[in-house]
Each structure stands twice: as C-alpha cells, then as structure tokens.
Image (cartoon, rainbow, N blue to C red):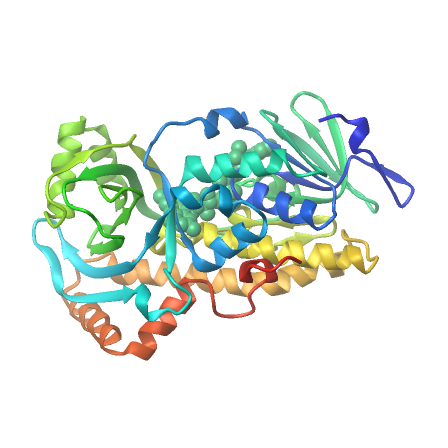
Length: 421
Ligand SMILES: Cc1cc2nc3c(=O)[nH]c(=O)nc-3n(C[C@H](O)[C@H](O)[C@H](O)COP(=O)(O)OP(=O)(O)OC[C@H]3O[C@@H](n4cnc5c(N)ncnc54)[C@H](O)[C@@H]3O)c2cc1C
C-alpha cells in the first residue's frame, strides 16, 4: 500500500484509513469490500501471505453457504467470480446413524423445491472463495490489503485506533475491527474476555471421490461420537467430509495411513454412493464454543469467529459471520452518510444490539443439537428419531427450519437481501 495515498485527514487527525480490519480470512475481506463500496477507506491486515492461500490446489475444504450469504456475495461483487464453481444444495437428508449399521429409519429431508428462493444453499471451496475475494479486493478503490503482516499491538484513544505491525509499521484508523478468528488478539488486547467450552470433539475434514453421482444431496449422519456431514462438491463425484469424533478417536484416525483412514470412514459413510476413495488433504479442527463478552468497545468491533465460534454441526459459522458483516457495514456506512463519528460507541452499539442476541442464540442452539445427537443414550436416541420423523411429517415446521438455515428469517441486513447499502 502507498502509505501517503491512503492518508485521510479526519477531524484534524491523520488517519491511514477510516477502518482498519485485522484479519483477512473470509469475514475480513467481505467486510472490507462492503465498507469500501459504501465510500469508506479501508485497510485489511492479514498475517498470512495472500497468494499462498489463493493458489492452494484442491484440498476438500469447503463451506455450505446459505441463500442469504450468496446474496451478500452478489451484492459485493464476489458471487459472479464464483458462480461457475459452486454446487447448489438441492436436498439435505439428516438421520441418526451408527458405524456399520447405516442410517436409522427416520429421515428428515429438506428439499429445495419447497423454497421459492431456489436452492437452500451452495457448497463453495475455500480456495475458490478466497481467490474470488482477493480478485475483488484488488479491483476495489479505497481498499488496501496488507498481507504477510501481523498486528502485535493496538491503542485506542478519543480520536481513533492505532496498530503496530510486527515489521514496526504503524497504522491509524477511526475504527478497529477484529476479524482475526477464534483466538482474536484484537479482543484480547482490548480486554474483552470470552466464554465457552471445548466439546471434547475434533472434526476430521477431508474430501472423497465416489462412484455414484451425489445429485446435489447433502447428508448429515448423527453418530454417537459426533456428526458426519457428507457435502456435495461440483462435478457430481466429489464430497467434502466433516467428520466429528471424540478427541482421542480423532487423533488415532488422523494418525492412520490413507488406507487405514478410509477403512475407518467406510462403515460410517455407508455404500449409498458406491466405492469411495480419498481425494483431499486431511485436516483436523478441535471443536469448541467461544463467545466474546462484548462485540464492541469505543472505536472497536468484533466480527465473525472473533465474536463467536460455533460448532460446525449445521455449517453456520461463516453464514453467521456474513450476517455480522452485513449489519456492521450497514451501521457504519449509514452513520458516515449522516455525518456521525463512525467510531462513537453509540454507533457501534447499534451493531452489537443487532447481532449479539442472534449469534448467541444460534451458538447455544448448535450446542444443544450437538449434545442431543452426539450420544448413544437409547432414550434420547428414540426421542430424537421420533423428533426427526415428526418434523419431516410437518411441512410447515420443516419450511420454517429451512428458511432459518437459509438466513431468510429475522432482521436481515440489506446486503444479505442482495441490495446495496
Ligand atoms: C470443520 C469446520 C467446518 C466448517 N464448515 C462451515 C460451513 O460449512 N459453513 C459455514 O458457514 N461455516 C463453516 N465453518 C466455520 C467457518 O470456517 C468460520 O466461521 C470462518 O472460517 C471464520 O472466518 P473468519 O474470517 O472470522 O476467521 P478466520 O478464517 O479464522 O480468519 C482469521 C484471519 O485472521 C488472521 N489473523 C489472526 N491474528 C492476526 C494478527 N494479529 N494480525 C493479522 N492477521 C491476523 C489470520 O491469519 C486469519 O487469516 C466450519 C468450521 C470448521 C472448523
């Protein structure tokens, strides 16, 4: 970034940008684009070198994005760069399961045909999404990306926020936004504590190639040790696997060679897609719930996993983050247009009021679903099978669940309806 080019004289103080975003994972770039397109000057700082992530080969890591997230990505010009590389989710089938026994008789099926908005979600590979963000950022005036640089210190004063990078470089903005993930240093340095707990579960993530076409169907098997999600990828014959096991079992499985890993996966996966082979790298993610005690402070806001890290059981983490992005962008852009100080605490509190209740409710909801399904108690098993069957038999209730998961319920930020701010 040309430092001089980005100097803004705001209220008598020199700022490098209106908004400094720490973290260029996925929520940071989305927020940066939304704010810059709304006329604010933004600098995104990310510790990882950008090209490394964009140029990763196929590794199977992918996200299930809700309709509302697709609309946000369309509104900020990212979706057109991705549209040819996504897999629409046409059906979701959820069932109780046990390794070697196949799914239980009670299925819950969500069908895209029941939503007038179209497919209820889309599978998008991490590398494709990131590359699309990178390309969009490079073309957006008023947005600068500094990658391969870590923020190591921050200071807030009455007029702005100052950060120091590991290289010694100092940057100043009117607002500092932490998009720096679950162990957000921005939150920690601001003295914002976190609540949460570990699940004693680790997600094994990989990709498989399978014989039969998946036909756009996503499967969720609720195993006693944790859920197994089989998520359709473009082309019909690849799926992304998010497979939760207790920490000890996951460590044992991860330590196996590919043949052993596949042998452990097969009885859980079943044979409904024919023969399967491993097709991606093998990742592990220890699972925990983490909620920041506050989402804002004067001149500071937290977004995405920095504010709330949820269980991936329903693939809602990034979707929740994009709702934060839409809400914070709307609050800041409208405040700037009205001539308000975007870093004033009463402005930032509008964002917190909008997002904190929704995120906390969803985080705790995912927590309960995981507790209900990740066990082998015969009474709970019978009850939840009955519950799945019951919801399946009630189209009205089923549609409510679908609309909720698609991000169409509640007070939806403008960008998540596909409209510009
Ligand atoms: C197994 C698994 C499956 C998932 N599946 C789904 C799914 O299907 N759908 C869905 O919606 N969500 C899903 N999620 C959740 C989703 O991955 C996260 O919500 C999302 O990646 C969070 O993005 P973020 O940008 O907030 O944080 P991150 O992706 O963690 O990015 C944080 C960034 O901050 C940078 N950073 C950190 N500290 C500093 C610093 N000091 N200076 C500069 N930069 C810094 C890091 O380099 C990183 O790039 C899943 C999660 C897991 C674990």
